[in-house]
Image (cartoon, rainbow, N blue to C red; front, top):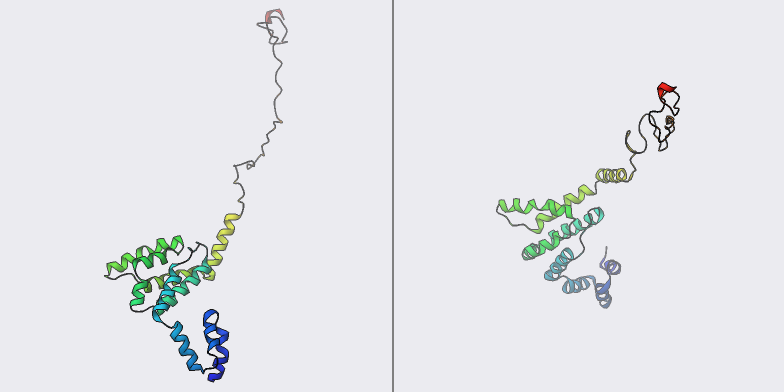
Length: 211
């Protein structure tokens, strides 16, 4: 691709202030345009500060936000490669790492807890380059097709109404019971009140000896 073609296509990949810079130097050749962009936006300190700010600022990811976890993992991976030397140390300070870790889902914060201890046992200090592969592996697991399918099946099972077990609830195994009795034995006639020793044979109001 010639320099003229590069100058023609470059504005299509830019926006905002960077595009405004390009529009002001469109009459120049490609090398001059690139040098202008590097002078304006290619300062290592500025790039490092922007990377760290993007990692530390933002809401915490939800436990089921697997797509968000994958996006954050890619952001971490890119930053760990861009930030080298003193800029990596700045991103790996205790304060910066705490802010980055706070953005992870709760279950990942708990899993990560043992890693700094292991690194310290080996005489090292926890750095951004240690956190990035950890998050990358967890994001790969959560976005694996097998895990997603299993998780959906578990959620479906929780939402289904489970049938009541035999012998419990309203319906029991065997004979069905009803709240209304239909097999009540007839109640024998009551003895006349106020008469003692009524006849047990005819229930008359006399003694058995007089029947």
